[in-house]
Image 1 (cartoon, rainbow, N blue to C red):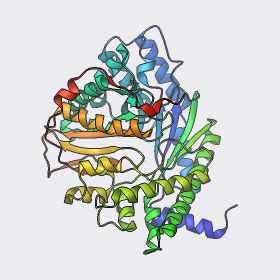
Image 2 (cartoon, one colour):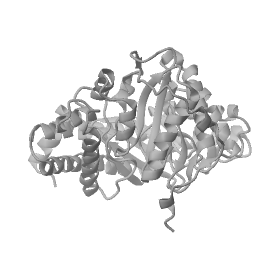
Image 3 (cartoon, rainbow, N blue to C red):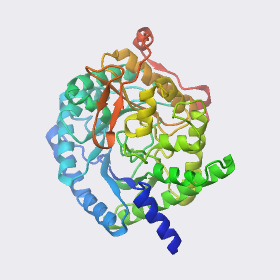
Image 4 (cartoon, one colour):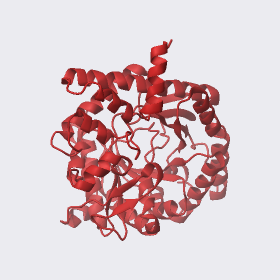
Length: 454
């Protein structure tokens, strides 16, 4: 039972410190949507999504109203579409037709994003996988609510460099097709290594093949709550600092657990996991960058940043895992540049560089997230940046991701504006030296030696 002190404390976290449930994401399996023709598959996909998720948005709003807890997004993740459409899609254009059906279904049920326009190619591409990847630019430029991802590696399989090379080309093509909106299409696409099957956060969410027919996953947030807690201890030692972060993460996760259980009960869909990531927004006071500054850094990117982020990430996980038996997804601290006001400020003044961000991703939840780079960045350079980040995930046995946006027509010193939760970002400098010969090699990078654990 909650006592009055805890009720007041939770209310303060919501009203003053930007605590919210960032997303309720319903995962839906589409493995039973196979058919003899493309039209049959499209109809089955649309009917299943609009049937299973018909009450998702209403239930989310009802819980938000009754409990007074903001639920920012209601989303859907689906079985990777390369698996679903593989038997009937004979070219990239066929997959684009499925993308448009998914977009229509998202509009019908009222969710803001649907993730899973995806391919799993950690060890190689089937023809269907390649068709889907080649369809991504057209799919993202002709829809509004589709999010796409490609898993190009894992610790167990190594890295598929053919897929990484192709993805770099598709990112540049997506940027060109959406250049009128600061290449916004690229903000809805992510490349992953060691992707979890149960991630509720876009753009990398998909409903893994190990999951049931439908599931409810919840992603909580709360960097503003952590910052407020740290403001009260100022010059305390590391023991007190860590205990404060851990206790705060526990409280944040309990709020998410309550929402997840209510959503599961009301929708009649099993509860999957809580993802307890600190996910920032562009709002002042809701920033992982501010938390790092409260720990003692002038800006994110200053010497000591990687150590501070490692500590923050670890304590968030330790606190959250005591609050829920089912913690999963990514869980930890996100560092998306465009979605965090103080990270934007740090990148703008030069404290935070692309290379420093890469170092930070060794210890945080995801990777290079919402990075805007010059529009004339070469395809091979994009692939090289992706390969570097995927290698970090592969060797360190962790999830890593890249969401990079070559903003056509803009260069270092300018800004790209994406709007809403996606925010805005300064165009960051990219190393100008070539990796063309490396990226042009065919095949895959083998799994590291420590992957052999059988």
